[in-house]
Image 1 (cartoon, rainbow, N blue to C red):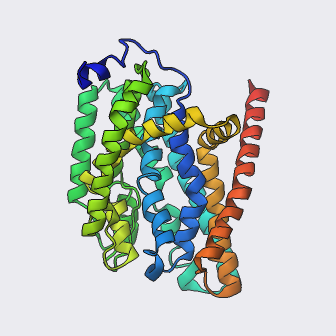
Image 2 (tube, one colour):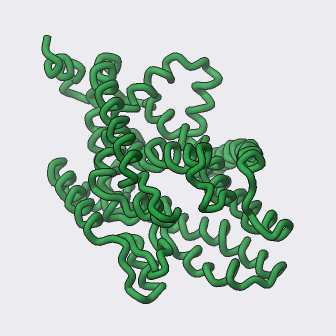
Length: 383
């Protein structure tokens, strides 16, 4: 039997693979679990130490192929595994996420920064960046915009092929038009939601521009359609995953050796952020391939986890937005306000930084579960 025939035999003609998908849960749980480590390390590590082994591990390896790209890809796939998978529901969820991103910015930046300014009187640290911190884009704004656009295209009955063509064209356009400075900060911030903008001084004004990243949720959505008909995951992943993981590993090592693409260090951390946030088409293609391949490993692991670990990963995945919101408030308040006010700097050695990350995670997850419980109780009272 040929490999192609073996892969074809893994699929049914109808939807057979319904319910929660354990590999998507673990794919989302890992970046969620690592969020306090990634962001605390970035906030507390000076630029000259960011390429040391532990900061590099969290900032580049965990924060990139295992982090946001997997979350975004899984977000697209999970749209097909919800009760509200119609176009209008996807658009509505997108709008709520988009607005939630600005509310989070207000809670994690504006309020703490105003408190920091009231205590220290430091304008440059707390007041100068406050407009950008409030209205700049991050992954929640991107997720919201991408859902609204994807919902619109689904509602217009755009074919799968055309979805891929549109997303691919956007990726190429975003790769060609990036690192743009319009000379006006508010314009850089506003347009930064769509293309990669930065100031002349190199300051990045857009973290997840729609043009560069939209292809990830689209491919996740299309993979979700494939997953719905997958009747033999064991055989499918056994054939596909090793090839893909090996190929991506070679690609990743090649980029590291040549200091280019997503892992390109450049002269400063800012250059590295440009390479990642204003991502090129071939890097985002690499992320997509990696995401599909690594799901096979996550499927195998979830099937061999003890029940407590399986349930823990599922709960993390289920509460991904809550964990994201809560941990960021802790990270910003503790590093940019509390430690900065007390010590005059938020920079710390890697040991105390990791300890702080553990503490933040220890508080974040129970609070996320409590938030989930209260939300469920409120829905039960209404319904």
